[in-house]
Amino acid sequence: MEAGIYVDALEREAGRLVAAASGGLGRPIAACPGWVVADVLGHLGRVYRSVTDIVSNRLVDQPTTRVPKPPSGDEAVEFLTTGLADLVEVLRSTPPDVPVITWGAVGNVGFYQRRMAHETSVHRLDVQAACGAVDSFDGDLAADGVSELYEVVLPFGLSRAGKGGPTGSLHLHRTDGPGEWTLEMVDDVLQVSSAHGKATAAVRGPGSDLFAFAWNRGCSEALEVFGDPTVAQAWAELAP
Image (cartoon, rainbow, N blue to C red; front, top):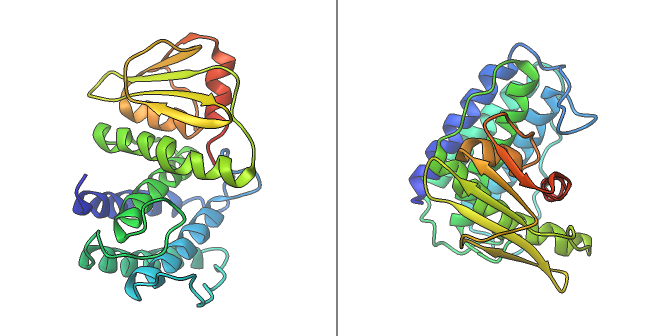
């Protein structure tokens, strides 16, 4: 996807998040035990500031600037929105191929343009689920979010934790556009394939619902689960 699509998504999803959060900052976040809505805003506000520092200064080494602690209560909204404005500006004005430090295999600004769009989308879902109705995601963006989880986020998390994945394979099949993913652990290394194939468990449905499932944000009625559902859930529970 083009960088502009990611930055547009970041801005749009953050706007939806703030709109939902304004009436329920103290409501609990089911997917993040111990957090309330204000904590999500504070978390994102800190992440936005950290990424802004890296990209605006084109850092290729670990940043030394300390990110401020987020405020509590109503001030959490402004903390997020001011951080968002700066982040959107710097991500729009910086080419994706500019080298910067990241925690992934791709060491450029494009990593953060993509990562911030999906990080914000996941937490928009969290906040809307806590405060009311949940909007669906654009199918293509959601499919890209599934790919990013399996190709970037999950391998990093498994490596950092020094643990393997579930016994048994998982296949996801998108029904509203292109998108297939087959996951399997081979010698304690995650293998991801985009080819159609059989697996121990399979989940089939629209991209928006697959995105939520892959990130362990629930299995909607729009999804069909085949094979061993415990294997499917075990893969979902690996998501951060």
